[in-house]
Amino acid sequence: QVQLVESGGGLVQAGGSLRLSCAASGSIFSINTMGWYRQAPGKQRELVATITSGGSTNYGDSVKDRVTISRDNANNTVYLQMNSLKPEDTAVYYCKITYRSSYSSYWYGYWGQGTQVTVSS
Image (cartoon, rainbow, N blue to C red; front, side):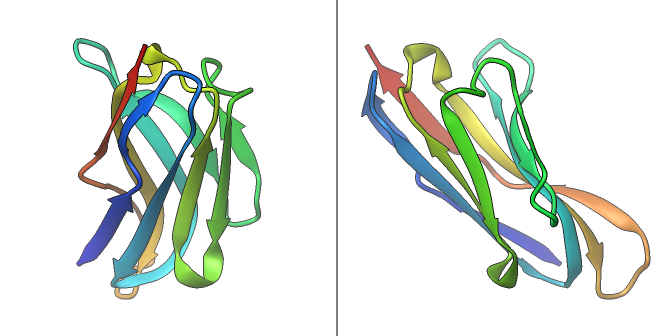
């Protein structure tokens, strides 16, 4: 069993900032990639940012100048600092990890439940 606990979402005015956190726990041997995706109503889920265990990052084009992803490997936690938020950033933000379990040599993907971010104009 794997658990992802996401926090930090909420309502913010345009131009404001939010910091999302996602803590992974459970039967995890190691985590390769941790990341954030988002899905707005009526739209497909899209990449926000990912970070590997070595610290390599990848950002979605729509956010790359306004967000920073980081992680705490010792605590299996990933953070997303979002600045200069816009109404179009309103979406459910999902955490995703790629991990190897304690009982298998295979790598699995796992999604969190999502946290709502609403940016008012």
